[in-house]
Length: 133
Image (cartoon, rainbow, N blue to C red; front, side, top):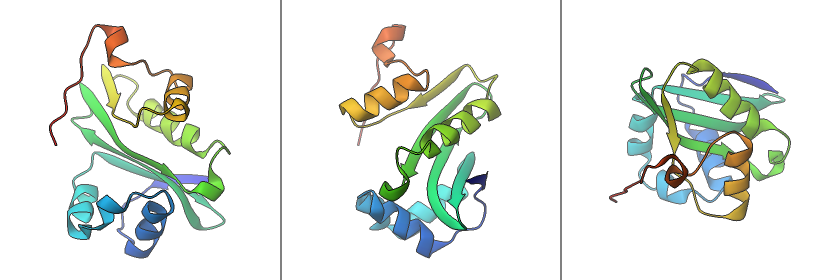
């Protein structure tokens, strides 16, 4: 596996990755997704045999707060350490940042994964998360 910064938009591989995990709401507004990528703080991609296997995208100021906006690993590459490697790369890159946050589905698998990466639920830190869609 090779992890590197994702700098050049490659629509075909992005569509394939997002579709593989069922995130089609993002790809219905492809220009908005592309703009999101262009304005991201950092996007890292994991490649297996030259093919995009996973991706992590962050937003924020990079000094006081970083939000992990997207973490996707194609189903055929899941449970092989790619998601963990992508999270670890972001945590290493922003080691001095006070808050690294994310919002995820409340499933046992997601909760277990992020806990294994050292994340805690906001309520455990005396914080509350609000979302407006």
